[in-house]
Length: 343
Image 1: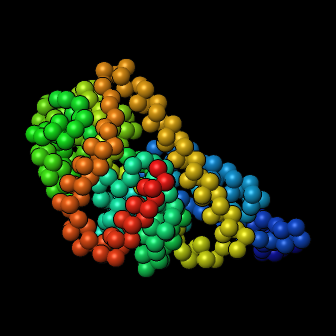
Image 2 (image 1 turned 60 degrees about the vertical axis):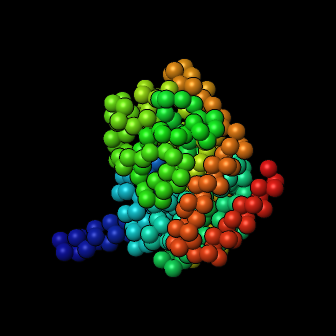
């Protein structure tokens, strides 16, 4: 055998091995290409989001007999949230997640979720997001080649400060907190709260140096950022509920077989339920731990929260309608009211 023929056979053998390594076989022994889902997000590796996605990965890979592979990229490995959305639109990623409040410039209808005191509880929020309103608000994704899979959650934002607990409207008067957007600043100022525009990375130092009295954030953020070292009171105002939208590249989803698409969507719904449960457990654990850190925790009465909501939303209602559209605003508010009856 000549050297030239030997080299040719070697190339053919290696090529065949490579193809085999990238394919699987069905029950008839025919080669099938493996489908890969690359999913990026900015939550940490020990977050409820990542834990639920790991379960999604496990179930999808097992139930597809290895024909679908899921690759997870947590902690912003592939960029910040808006950058990952661009990658999903291009098809460089197949899926990602992010709070809708971060996408309002691209999808103005999402602005409606920035209204204050929409939901009385997490269950109330879930019913609205899983129902007509949540599904309608995912439709604009289609204009950018995306499709929504559902809503995980970051949860309710609450209010911390170093002056006094918040039990009624008057307790907010004169407090200085961090501001970060014109809409949010306008809403809080309607309750006589003073706001200073401060970057998130500067909040802890500002609290320590008493440049501001307090801040508002999710319970997990308050704990993870160790704000309890500079704050005495954590009041459960529950003024904003932050969703975490899970979306995918629509072309990728449409190219899946009917069976595989059903599998992916079914396991996505299960992962969403799991994430919500884990988030609730995490919040309970943190609230039980905060008193050990010297923080006084109090639940703001529902009637006070609704009173605050009426004032704050009246201040920003026209701004949101201008962005989201009056029809969208009315539809969401009707659904919120309808699902409130089930509380």
